[in-house]
Image (cartoon, rainbow, N blue to C red; front, side, top):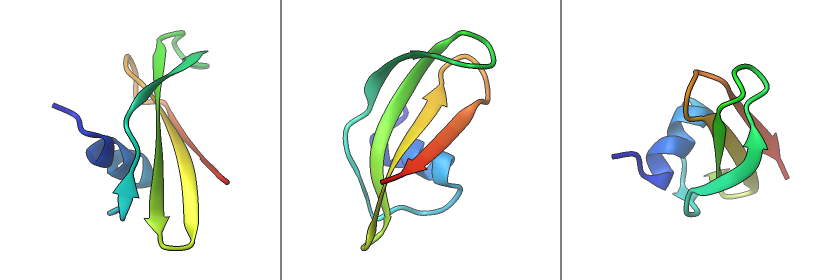
Length: 65
């Protein structure tokens, strides 16, 4: 089972300090049209990132806030 923290670590490619609950991103994947999940997480104490991951293909993206 994927947890918020494990999804955030997969998107970040490294450990994260904390992660918010996973939610539906209400958008389609730009590569395959599949459903996209979003998760907010803190890769460090001074930054917050929203990560997006398709459920159907390897596409992922991260946006710093």
